Image (cartoon, rainbow, N blue to C red; front, side):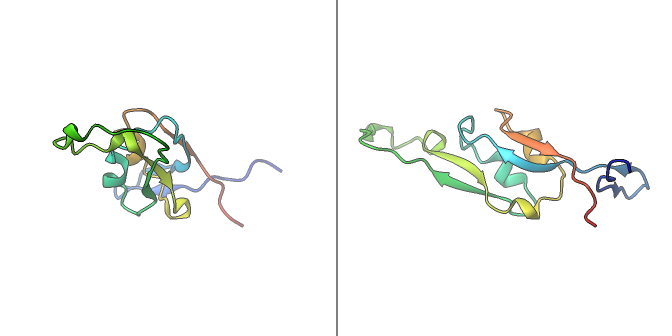
Length: 105
């Protein structure tokens, strides 16, 4: 027997496309910018604070609202991913890995 067919979507115009689902996120590369979180239509992602031990933060930096050095994104609900790849399109660090998935039997 051949390979199982992949999940296939149909656009409104009738064109077939194969969704590419988020299956991994490289948390080490992630800068915590939140762009992927903002574009995800299914709440697949969550921002997590990095564990910081014995780090002396400069309190003179109160004007900086960018906590990206101290946080990263994680796939908390990957089974809710619809395969649109919007997260990868906005990610400045190419943190995501996507795969087509076979049709479940």
